[in-house]
Every structure is written in structure tokens, then in C-alpha cells.
Length: 368
Image (cartoon, rainbow, N blue to C red; front, side, top):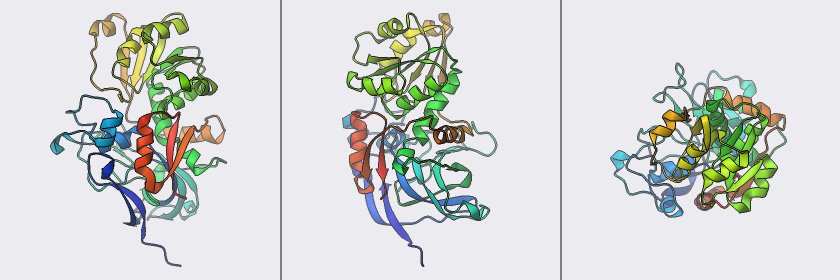
């Protein structure tokens, strides 16, 4: 039986609006290089990196957050100012999609033949061989290399993590980006049992993952989200859900815990940043991995100095993080929050729904 040579894929043809996403049925199936595996994709989740990259939000010329308008049309910036998360220029066309679940169907040289047939999820961080924290040698799956919005994809064998689970491919595709990002955010703050943590953007993929991971650590979780999403977040483990439309978020956070919180986790930024800093106790810790509401903020450095705060950015995820999360998934300790599924040809519609932020958890493209 001959293997097909072409596949379905959605390719990103350049920075810009949703019109830059092109559905194809004649895209070449990639061949695994030495040390790589070929995965038949079952499902691939969406995340903010997909939107940020397409719209050119990572450009230093962009000072605004992602809105439905800018997310649909992209930002008007000079091509020379545009790059991916690490500022390096991207090569187009590019197949995006970091959150892959599927099966290994072929291998490159140096990979054990016994891996063919394994069910896997992809660890999206392709770290350097020497210093994992070196951004110049790190890459992100679906950004610096082709990802999973296609029938097949290739990745390093070490990044294809075997998983044994009754969950569907669509459910498994909710985990890779969101849960590794959330785990990284939490780990940077050294969250301890009994501490109070506030999570901004708690209804998104990263936020809903963070609720579960914080609860597994025995922390008290205060979630910020719209009122309509409160019940589900409480089911995930949030002790209190604060309406994001509250006129004084800092006061509401402090009232919920009877004082300042120990830790603030933020993927929102913008005006929320100041409230989170104000809500921290003396010696509190803040960690961020995104700024969808706006990357440029005002900050009184006296709060940092005289409250002895620790502020941390969290992007590159340490090696081994995804493997540890897979073990938690296999034990049933982490719940997939699958908000919606779309067929591959409707990726643009899926991104539109993702940007509307009416969902809780993750939106996924299913290949079947």
C-alpha cells in the first residue's frame, strides 16, 4: 500500500487578518528527519500564540491588546518590525498549531521502531541542547516550525510524549500549551499549600488549567472572570470568582481573602496589572505569561520596592514539564475543558470564536 504524498492543511501566508489563513488539500506530507517522528494528527488546539503571531502582535510597534477587531484584521506594522514570540522573523508559509494529539505513524533515523503506533501529545517547546533557557536556541512548535493544523506533522521524538488515556484526541489537545504555560507560571512563584493565589483571565485555557494546578498544590484560588462563567470555575476548584467588571478589583480580591494575596498569576495585563499588584501582600509574587488586554502598563516602582514584591515573566517552559503533566492526566487528576470543536477547514471560524472569549477552556480543531 502506497502512502499518500499530500494532505489537508491550513497555512498562514503572512502576518495579517483571518484572510491570511488558507485551507489546502494538496499540501505535502512532511518526512521525519533523523530523530523525528511523523504524527497523524487527531486534533489540534488553539492558543493565543496562533493569534499573536498571525496579527503581528509581538511587534514592538504594537502597544494595544488583542481585540475582536485587531484579531480579525491584524495590526498595521512594518514587516521589518514583525517577528514571533522571540522577535525573530517567521518564515512563510507556516502551518501553525502547537497543541497536537495523535499517533506516530512513521519515524526518522535513530528513533526506535517500537514507537510506531504510539498515542502521543506534543510538548510544544523545542529547547536547545545545551542551555534550555537560551531563547536563541529555543523554538515553539507551530511558530518557528510547522505545527499541527494539518493531517500530519513532524516533531522531535523526545517531544512526542506517549500517553495512555481514555480521553479523546480533542480532549487531549486541550492540554499541551495551556497546561505547560500554567504550570510554568505557578512554578516561577514557588506556590505553597495554604497560600492564596489570584488568577486573572481564569476562564481561558491557561487560567482554567491554573485553577486545577493550584488546587493540586493545596492553594486557595481566587479567580477573575465574567459572572456567567463562575459556576464552572468553582467546579474546577476556585474558592471565589470575582466579576472582572468589578469597579475595584484590588479591593474585591483583598476582601475575598481577608487581606493581600500571596501570588498573582496574569495572562491579561492591561489595566488588570495594576489591580493585581495592589492586591498582593507584602512580599507577594506576581508572574505573567501574556498581556491580551494590553502589553504597555503604568507601574509605580515604589510598590515593587517598598512591598518587597517579586515579579517574574514566564515564557520558556523547563524540560520535563510536559512529561510530568502527562502523568497527572493519566491519573485523572487534570480535567480537559473542551469548549468547542471545529473541522480543519473552519480554522478561521474557530479563531474568530476564540477571540470572542465567550468560552471557558479551549477550542480545538478535530481532523476526523
